[in-house]
Image (cartoon, one colour):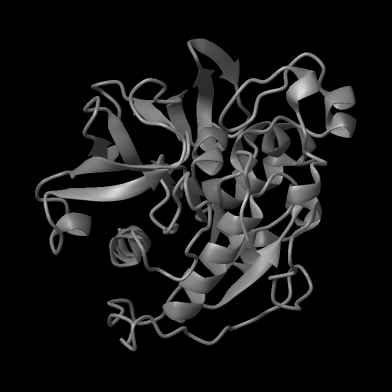
Length: 307
């Protein structure tokens, strides 16, 4: 599976644009309407990689075997139940990678979509929800009920966002210097991107791991991770935010965590779940190899759940 275009950098579909003519912003780029090709044949030609479960239905997958190794021992007595957002705006490559990741580490997970965001009792089904990379403007404009998600986190739920999901969780999305108000505001600050002129879409770039942070204790001081136009975070010195990693190229926070009401959030600018991509060979490794950083991602999640 591959994309010659940049699938997590499109604006909304033509139908969506009719709904949001005043603001059409993706997780990654502002493009002229004529350039938006959500119905591109290569993007529509996608395999059905989802497990055959209904949204909201319980499902526990089987762990995968990476290089014949067993998954690391989990430090939690019981792993939380995860909702993987796979609805409008999500990037299928990213969703599949997270499905494989959670299978490998033996989590229980369900798929949820924009309809579930509107009417599901999230706390009755899941402990945490992850929003993958994709289309931040679709998250903002086509998910019908942000209040349900806000209530879930405020009352003790956990939000995890990568790239578009991290932009979506920020109070302000800043793209090429222009600010856009976003609805969740779990992180009360700006998610800023892209790193144009410093890191290109699809590059592997270096991340400085915050010394002494529990997430990073078993890892080298720097880590190389794939980047697909995700944000860095403009953090006020008075903000109560955990900085887990920063971009080497600009020394700005790249992975952060914080609290919202009784709940918590963890936001990734990069994509530690993805591997194997290059412009010359635009395939993705979705099984934890070829540059994916699954052990560090798992360390981040275990720390978050126990924090």
